[in-house]
Structures are given as C-alpha cells and as structure tokens.
Length: 455
Ligand code: C2O
Ligand code: CU
Image (cartoon, rainbow, N blue to C red):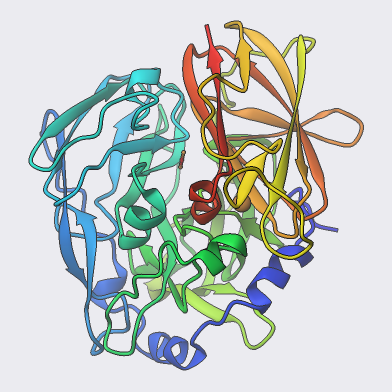
C-alpha cells in the first residue's frame, strides 16, 4: 500500500503508454551535471518590485552538445528564475510582457488576494504585448509553490512560462542545502525544436500533451556525502504524472503542495500530478538520482553528484517544519459534487467540449457554487472518465478526506484515478472568484474547468 495517499499503479499505467526517448535519456545520463541542468540564480538582489520579463528564450533542454530549443521563459531562462519570498511580507512582482501575444501569471498555491490570482477574464485583463502588470500579495504560508502563465496555458506553460516560487521559513532550518527540482516534459525533435502539438485533439481527448523527453532542473548540481538537505520537487509538466524514485538519500517527505505534513512519511511511492509539490528532508548517502519508473528501465530525470564528504554534520532528528496556519474546518454547510466527464475511451459524453464537470464544459457564466466567506464545504470529486485527473482549486488549500472522513493531507491539487472519487473539505475563507480545473492543462482547455464565488 502506498503511504502517499494514492495507489501508484494507475499512474505507472499512464507512463506505460507514453513514449519517452530512452536513447536520449541515456545520453542525458552521460551528460548529467552539465551547466544546463542548473536553474538560474535568482538575481533579484535588492529589486523592488521583482521583475519578471516574459520573452522568447533559447534553452538547452536536450543533453549538452545537442540542439538548443526555442521556447518561452522569464528573464532569459526556462524555467524562470527561482523567486524566494518572506512569509507574511508583501511581495511585489512586476511582470513585463515581451511576447507577441497576451499573458498573465498565476502564483500557484499561494492563498492570495483574488485580484492578484492571474486568471484572465475571471480576475484580471490580459497583459498585452509590451505592457506590464505588478502583482502584489502577502504570502501567508511558508513552503514550495510555483508560478506559471494562466493564458492559453496548455501552450504557454508547455513552451516554458513557469518557474519555482519559494516562501521561506520564518527561521532557517538546520540544513546544508535547500535544493529545488522542477520537472517537466516536452515533445522535442532530434534537432532540438519544440513540436507544436499543444492543441492536438487526439491528445486533448486522451492523457494530454505528453513529452517524448522529460527532465528536472535543479538549483544546485552537487552535494557532499553526509549532507542533510531539503529537496523541493515541483511537477511543472502540463499533463504528465511523475511517479518518482529518489536514490542516494535517506529521509522522508515533510510537506505536500507547500503544507507541512503532521507526520513525515516515507518517500517510497512518491507520485506528483501536474502542479503538485513535495518537500523532503533527507541525508545524502551517495550520488542522488531522480528517476521515473517506467515499464522499461527507469528514466533518469535529474541527479546530484557528490563532491567530498561532510564530516561536521551531526546526526540526530531532522528539523521539523512549522505547522500550517489555516482555519480549522467546521461542519460542512454544503456538499458539492463535481463529476469529471468526457474524453476518449468509454464513449462517455462530456458537455459541449471534450471534457466537462457535471456535463458543463468550460467556464459557465454563473459560478458552479456560491459560498459564503468562512463556510466549510465538502466536495466530492468523481472521476467518471478513463483517465486520471489532477484537480486544482485556486486561492485555498483543502483537506483530502480518508474513507472514515478523517482529515488527510492539505493540498491545492488532488489526483483522482480513473473510476475513483475523492472527498475533500475546504474552508472557503478567501473572497473572490476562484477557478477549479484539471491541471492536466490539455484537459482544462478541453473543457474541464469551472469556478466558485466566495462572498
Ligand atoms: Cu496552476 Cu489554474 O493553475
Ligand atoms: Cu484531467
């Protein structure tokens, strides 16, 4: 049995029918710890506001020595620079649009003011080419988040408009390194060019745009044997679920979707749906490998090499994260059901588009639910389709409920296997218009999105 809250077999099934170029993977393995594997340094020193410019970039995605890839990025790089914020302190981030089309940036998982949520039409106008918008918010929770385009996101995120967003702990933990690992996948030709299949109807109706090449970008390339490190894993892929196995470390998962777990748990069977995050605190026992199990050999996504040994590190219990500070759920005053419908295989109908919630595709004019600020709401997500879906609620975290209704993990994105359902409990304490959508971004554009209004 998995202790991450979901059986891993269905996700492994997903990676079985998704081709990955194993030959390229081997070359990546040989070319590992190339400069290209390292995330750009923040480089924001002293800037107020922080400046992010969306623009075209040329990135080494394939192993060093192979072709570069024309993509989108921020400040010249893909992924965009790591943003580090202080919990409880106002952050201002100016986004300049250097693209030839509109854009908007969503700060995924941050419980922020609705008008800063970055959702075109629902919460803001598009940032037009040449224009800028300053986002300003106070991040209430320390943890691992990310930012990404929320405009034609199945394409703009796939092209590279995303990056890590870290809200630092109030007091630094006793660790040797804090390392971000952001994962994604892309369809790339032999010459390095990105294949424009972002709205391919066949993939939209199935598991979504799925890369033939996947990799992680790390904020650091080396550690010492014996180091105690924090790993912040972010799945920034548009559609791929990453089952992960991490070698060369011993330790545990301490947070999911930014929120500290009540009890650390084993890192075996770790599964990240698109947009999900996991934080681990581990001791380094050897070269660290991040692998995705597949039906063939494991696929290496990233690695950390060893340089020397840390002999100063005292063993002892790992540091603990501050508990999340969210309102406690009361008795639910509404019970909503959102049934995922549509898609290929099984011939189920699904609204006017390819996918739907409750037979309604795309954003309805009226909210799916009207909720009074502070209400606790139970939502049952029913997956009546042949594919897994990772459902994301904006502006809030919710508790996954166990079979006996006890409170499970706090999440902002929950993975629901085909044919299964998940109950969650959410205290809607954040006023505004909030999206709920599948974070398989091909499914979102295919219709699987709705919204609620909290007043
Ligand atoms: Cu991370 Cu509506 O998205
Ligand atoms: Cu989906």
